[in-house]
View (tube, rainbow, N blue to C red):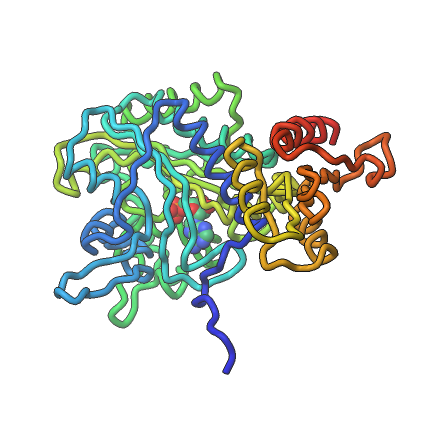
Length: 436
Ligand code: AMP
């Protein structure tokens, strides 16, 4: 019988790749915490209606991709397919003081057709700001996304920006789009052409712009542009956002088709793509404003804006640009134990307590086998505790990596009194690190 495999569309993140994953989280956390955002941790599953109403019934997420299930108590729950609805639900429930500036790191679940950069479980880092209508906060969140991606070393970033209008100007635009789609119905792709029990584009005309099939793409340039229908307030908001990006030196381009899959967006939408990925799945992160969502989920009228960025996708972009290499080593010292008993146990414990990253061998293996492990651990120094060392009250300190300009590593091996060896090693490791 062959062993179990991770479910289709999911993957394990093992070392050293997991260290790159952790670097993304650490870099993101540092950047957003320094901008006044606090971590929110909410359940991985919610009442399915939170996500259905949140993402919108016409979204692919709600229609086709949710992992929905009835629990043993008969409640209809869903695994989190996107981050925003959860944060908004938590806000409505707890009503923290506004503005509510939050960030999250979370797995997300979507029943999609797996392909390069598209998984059934992926992880997102994101921010949400509730309670601020000022377009400057749209600029702030976009700058945080771009700043985070740049901090990883990514240089090939393309920022697309659009405005989705609001409840004042969008209805008239939708009428015009509806007329256009009705007129061109026969030219639409299979999914968007209404048919046997299929509403097609009528489900939500805006979903036409999400469609990547050639028939719909060919029609796109002929469709009415939302930008031409914006009311003065939406135009002013969009202008202030794009001016803000210019003022911060963040390059951007207008993308009239950027409607981003969810039904909740109002005014600003944005997405950062990586041309280095060269695949259809090249979005590294995206988001926008959702001024009606808090109300949809049962709260008072409260503006909101945020984004999500897929960690796996970002790491693929890092591979494509050859940045953020996996770290080379995890510990600095490796304790080789040739005597058993308390010696290695205590020494390793003392090293760790003194802040020196240390690992050790277990099980009384041969010196050769232990030194091999020491080498594989990436440690800079091996501390050898053998019978002679124990008898003399010393420890052998053996540098494992040649330092530029020096040779003969063995010659540099020293015996250090046991009571001084932790401090000696701490200093030595610092010197070796500096010289490396
Ligand atoms: P969305 O929640 O659809 O707005 O997506 C936000 C970001 O999450 C995208 O820009 C991608 O970086 C990432 N993402 C979305 N869906 C997937 C997926 N199925 N697999 C991997 N990453 C994804």
